[in-house]
Image: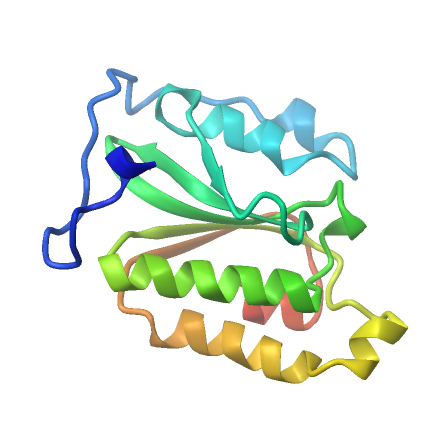
Length: 166
């Protein structure tokens, strides 16, 4: 992980040498054929050298965050995971994504967001908790960050999740 991050926020974008072809094609259609696929299967295919380093993996598995490289440039990844709760945007998932986005922004790390999400969590737990505050933090993290951001919709992106995830 230390090799993927700049030593400070003034250092700039980290480039790593993996030796992978920048024009390499990754066929993810087989993974996407299953409605409740695990997004890790896609993340293991798309980055340089098929490398993905996950962080916060013990918290909110419906949202995956971590680092990969594209063309040698280290990139933060935020990805909803359809294998867990259909990729619903839960309170914990929104919190996890917002914190990771803010971290990437503080170091100028570009972010790729992969979306396949049924929408917001409609559980009783979400109704009792400060759900809208966490969603507002996520929206603010995307809107206020000055790093480069790209969002790719892999499947479903319903309701507010379409707007909130990039």
